[in-house]
Length: 328
Image (cartoon, rainbow, N blue to C red; front, side, top):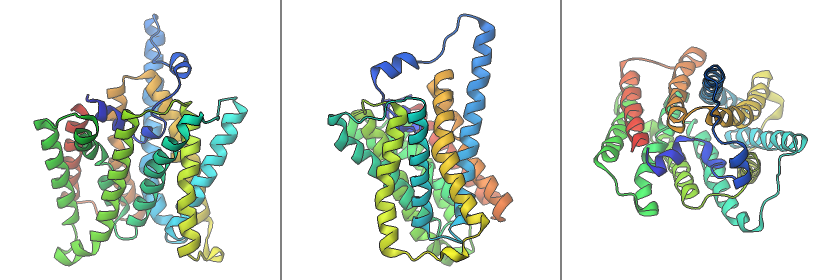
């Protein structure tokens, strides 16, 4: 697996990609001598990976439902703020260091804007035009874009495999966008497609840059600060552009906001850390491929979104491209 592919494979792990040497020393992959213990650790790793993929995948239909009651930026901003607060309190309770070294402040803000602000903002706005399953699939083309961005930023020349990955990924998106009722339906989806591609590109750029210039911080601290800082512009734009009707927000809306804060932005990061400690990086990376598939299936089950041969072909093409990108 190439360097940039590993960086993006840990999606959204580029938020916490680099940690201090002491953290790495305490939390390197577990390699017990006892075969029984090794098997238990591996099972625990796969359990963590399953929770992560399920939590991230379910986010898409839940968020789509939430923005029926709350404006998109307000919904995402509230979830991010609650997640940062909750993880910050957890870190304090467990005495995980939250201090930001002086030399890491500007890079931290840059990563926060790319990995959280742009990613969450663009992807949430894109749901105004796309179905949740469609959005999940387009968003998870990020490893393909990271593989291509690694050429100018890391000097990793694109191989034939990476070029094929790009072609397959774009073909999958093209098939998906043609899954509606002709050209008019495809044109109606264009703003959402562009926003989701912008989200994927911003996240891919953050992943590649985190490989070039890693943060020397505790990984949970990196998550807390990036979610907190990245949420600020989302909430700011919401205050300027949106007028939430708080009275019409019901149990579904508030429950969805709490879910986004507690599960994809909190629990899933912790289970992702657990998976990485117990499984090889490439195994964990391939496990995240279940996320867009879960997102699409859950969107069909929960929201009644269509799932036919076009969607199946789009999933197959896109995930084939992502696999090639991850394998470099």
